[in-house]
Amino acid sequence: AQGLVKIVHGQGVFIVNADDSDYLVKKLLDFKMTDVETIKDIMEIRRALEVKAAEWAAKRASEEQRTQLKELIEVTKEKISGKNKGILLILIDHDNKFHKLVAESTGNMIIERLMSNLLEFLFEIRSYTLKIKGRPIKSLNEHEKIANAIINQDPESASKYMEEHLRSVEIDILNKVLKNARK
Image 1 (cartoon, rainbow, N blue to C red):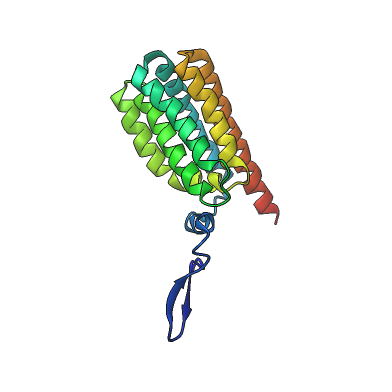
Image 2: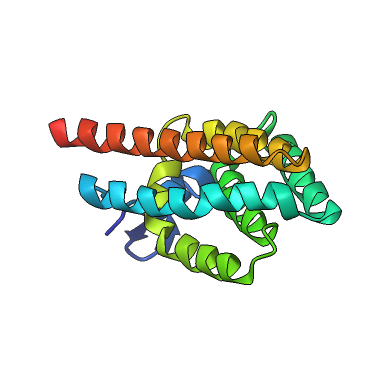
């Protein structure tokens, strides 16, 4: 139904564009997000949790967690440099790891569990977001600013950059939804 496979009579079933993993990921993550109020509600909850989580992470992250954040950014940038294909898969993985690591770095078991559940709940909207042209790289750059604030143990900057990141994501989503609604 999503056009991921084609059936050739007498030959079998074949994956369409099997050499383009980004295409496959985009098709699998195809989601029609259209309810503006739901998007705003979701992002409001994310800001309530994740802005505070970034602040706490900057205050409480262990040396090991700060190192993991730094390495996550560096490894992700290294993996995507010079690539044309497969970038979306790398950035989806990065996004999950980044937000989970920030939550873990708070030292608060409840926020870890809430974020883990929230990230699963948000799979569809996050998938939709990562399909917006330029958004995955933009998010990586915003994550780097947040990570650097946490690494430098600067809670004010960490919360400020997380707020900016989530607002930026929300604006991009809403612009995409409104653009699609006009079509």
